[in-house]
Length: 340
Ligand code: SF4
Ligand code: SF4
Image 1 (cartoon, helix red, strand yellow):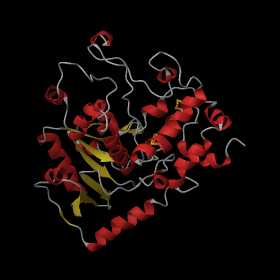
Image 2: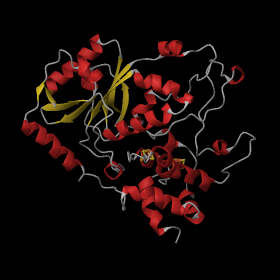
Image 3: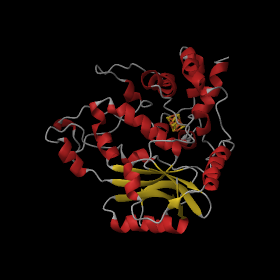
């Protein structure tokens, strides 16, 4: 573990902005809400945020992009990618990126994601402030030991830095850092322990029981109808989710490219269109089915294939839902009661 003074850290970020050819993005205050954006100066960086509106995966998952143009090989695609240094990623988002790396490595349609991901350096920061709707403590994602290049912990006048990769090591080349003392290492451990007491929302039962609890409740149609009743199918909960991936795009041919040469839009599982199969027949024609599909995907389907619960507990869906029916912790905690 290394230590850098806050003053030197700010100078480090300024140095990246001035001398590093990669784009530097970081968390910033955007009219009272936080979000990742391109940094213009180091003093704009806010590492004391609660949560961002959109997750950092927005840099790997474009809303519109070419996937399969026949004249586009990996080399030309890489040429179009902007290499980035992303500063200030919370542990739950780092875990979401780890999950997406696994899921999207399994499909050729994940190629664009993986190229962008490989071109990015991830600088994490441990949480100090917990967002009101966050329940990462229950999802085992409030603290991660891998999938970052650097990880910062705020110790007052200094940051403790864990180096997670060669890229992270190289980033610090020539920077004024020193080894952490035993006391500083203990302070980091204490901060992480204290963090676990700051969550006001949590799962009422052990996380490992979630997949089988969901499985048991799959056919409780009244339960899913009750929870989905006020859902307007706006799709916000999917857009803001760090583990969402949008590879259910329309097949891309020269014929369905937009005027700008890009293919048309994402599909997502709460839109009615999503549930149409290749013959244009609905496979999930009722709203409760699509709503259930989202919660099942997060807590059961991805788990069955990859062993991960695909909700990291960031709470963004809950904060953005116009009718407040998107919070997985609320639905999951209600599962043991069922529709009764
Ligand atoms: S954000 Fe809320 S209303 Fe919108 S689709 Fe999700 S659950 Fe439904
Ligand atoms: S389902 Fe909601 S709480 Fe879970 S990771 Fe997605 S946005 Fe965050």
